[in-house]
Length: 150
Image 1 (cartoon, one colour):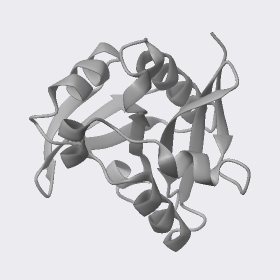
Image 2: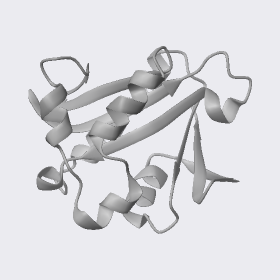
Image 3: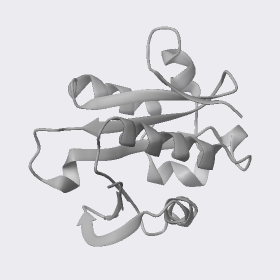
């Protein structure tokens, strides 16, 4: 299985926008269209990517790299991560998260921070499997998890 993170551009933007999570997961994540609009407001910080498996787009992810932020919790963040509803349950989420972690390491991040609702048990299970741990903080109504890379 070949996993690639490709920057969002004119060739894959519309495909990315059509990707959706299951109906019960919609409460946990913004639409990809909304995420791309947020990225356009955070140029230089937001890094949106399409997730490809063996040349086929299967998901979307967006990172925040805010190296001037003094708060380590906000410096390197996994803002968005989703696999299309029709492709879930095939191991693509695990494969993609492994690639996401590799990206952060290769770009000199010392940790990754993310947040999700405590009721998002499927995502929490995946994050825990890769070593993310709750740090006791909250971000609005979401728990904060952190993975130390160094």
